[in-house]
Image (cartoon, rainbow, N blue to C red; front, side, top):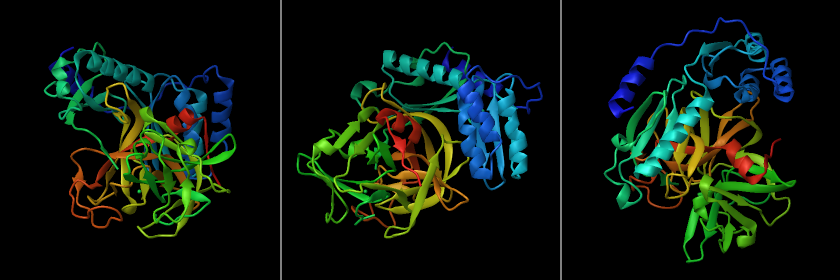
Amino acid sequence: MKYGQRKLALAMAAISCAIVTSPLLAAPSSSHVTGQARDKAANILDFDDLVSSLEDIRDYEGFASIMVDPGARRVNVYWSGPVPNEVGRFRTSAADVAVELTISEAPFTKAELSAAADEVKESARESGVQLSAIFFAPDASGLTVEVNSEGRSSGARGQSADNLAVDSNVPISYETGGDALPRARNDMVAPFKGGGVLLARQGNGTTAVCTAGFTVLKNGVGHLLSAGHCAPGGDPDWVRNGNQSVTVADGPGDVDVAPALDSLLIDPDPSPATDAQTFHGGLNTNDKKAVAGKSSPSVGEAVCISGSNTGGHCNAVIYEVGQFLCGATENDSWCDGFRVRSTNGNVIGGAGDSGSPVYVERSDGKVGARGIYVSGVNGFQTSCPVIRHGSTTDTSSCDTRINVVGINPILTRWGATLETS
């Protein structure tokens, strides 16, 4: 299918999805997943519980996507094909907590969209087209592919979507993008927590400024997440807090890096090493919020970014879910994640904020993890009103849109669990 044909197909597919009225069917054969969904549907207490409980239905065969509107207390689940009983049961549970949950028909499943995305990436590798990101339409009607107009290598420049040959019935539209811009509270002490400044001294004598991400447990021991490009070789001479008064990790033996996810795992020296909290508030805040759980991202969720270099920002919403190029220089380094945009045009992150926890605020005063901020979306930069390290006038320093790696693939990669309280 040629580029123009794809655009026509996407336009034809842009139809409203009707609420499913077909009979509910039995749940899939996995008794473990079925039992989890049934139990959670019966024990929902509020909007936050509902969104978290829907995590298990993402494993069902017909799942497509979820969109949320917390302000209006609405949740829309997109589904392809007959809806299992265990999924339909959530509608009753949602009504019990005054949430309007609809189940709408989707043209494609999440698995079908993912398979189409894999075809696009394979074609890009074969044709030399440099991509930046691939995102799934919120109603699961197609893909948006971002072609890198800058190119990470000279050979990739000048290539366009017309060079791609993708044999898929999934509608695909193309946009122009560019390289992601990698993006450190100052004097935190052990037990360490999310949102604090991390300084990583590299072997060449330079010092990277980043932010501590969520705390996780690996083999029962507390660790800190951050962005992989803060110590790209995984071998910093040391990692310290913002004023260098406390050593977080003493040498490369305490740090590991996963370049394909742009993820860093730090095993702090002090004990107790970590606490299931994140700084929440302005640049110099000492306020913290407990981390209570996690979930996959949904378009429409309001989120906060706890950046140590520009401060915390809650003027943000998830607007795209899919995959983006991260951590390396080739087309095959793709992260499962999402994009966040400012709701008022103001800054939501900047240089030194890489590694920041991205989370939703729960009604119980705690937060729910969604991912780790790793880069700014090219073309959405502005000058920084306040910044701890670096220039406040550099128009490339701060972001109004950001790329975030999802918390679930990060935890899977490290064989870790989110530390909660």
